[in-house]
Amino acid sequence: MPAGPGNPVRVAIVGASTLRGKELKQVLEDRNFPALDIVLLDESLMVGTLTEAGGEPTFIRALEADSFEGVRFAFFAGSSLDAEKNWSAAQRAGAIVIDLAGAAATSDRASIWIPSLGEILPPLPAKATNGSAQALCYSSPQTPIIIACTLAAALANSSPARVTILLFPPVSERDQAGVDELEAQTTNLLSFRPIEQSVFDAQVAFNLLSGYGESSKPSLEETRNAIARDVAKYLAGRAPIPAIQVVQAPVFYGYAFSAYAEFVAPHPPGQLEARLAGLGVKIAAPDDPAPMNVSIAGESEIHLARITNDPSIAGGVWLWGVADNLRLAATNAVRIAEELLAQAAV
Image (tube, rainbow, N blue to C red; front, side):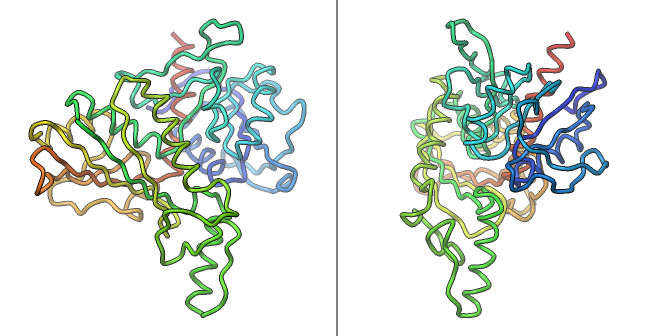
């Protein structure tokens, strides 16, 4: 639910020039978040870039000692390195940190939060340095973690014997550099010219990859392991942990996934769909086509096709879905801030 009326607060976005940062700013505006001022911060290379916030022209500023002065919410949407270097400074200035970059997820002082799952899987409290429970920082998970945790939460009551999720990340997960490389590779391959491979160290255009080249960092295996780690940390034994595999897809935007769940006895797909819908997942109507990367662009929810039974295994079901990778992650982060404002108003 969009933020309601209240005292406007100052917001900072670190990594404002990244795809995540731009989407986050747009979501804040679309949801009418009560921001008195949105401070756009980034690395020195992007400082001085003219942009807009709230319909007003503004410039991207450099990260400095006083960048977080008066800031209520500091969103970290750039690199994990920027987050690691600066989130403590934001906290010292009195800001509530919401990290989209993944740096805070490995810290015991950060609480991973998916508001759409709050009623059945509330965020686990973080630990302060003195051992007391205190959320010093909130980690807003990236899209594949939200997808995996949502599926696990919806299926938990049915006690599945196993859940497997195959994720197909778009190149925009590697920010604008990934988008540019896929575009250049596609053009050059069609023109029979050598291709650029500085991001993936492999041909991603017209291809599916189970791994990147050796010089690509992080590797696809490291990406998979980080997703699995954060999913397990958030679920924390409260729902079955799914097996996760990642295959790089030659698409620009939209995180697609295929999932398989197996139960001891046949399970009605309609019952599973109802549980997923209760967690905010959009289920396709019976006559609608299955969701695609293109069809869900700009949508804030996970979109799922109708669940189908496996033709060979009595208790097996298949799920296919897609989410706008940038929009879903940004919306989750803004919802965290909205929830905190609502709690403060009580």
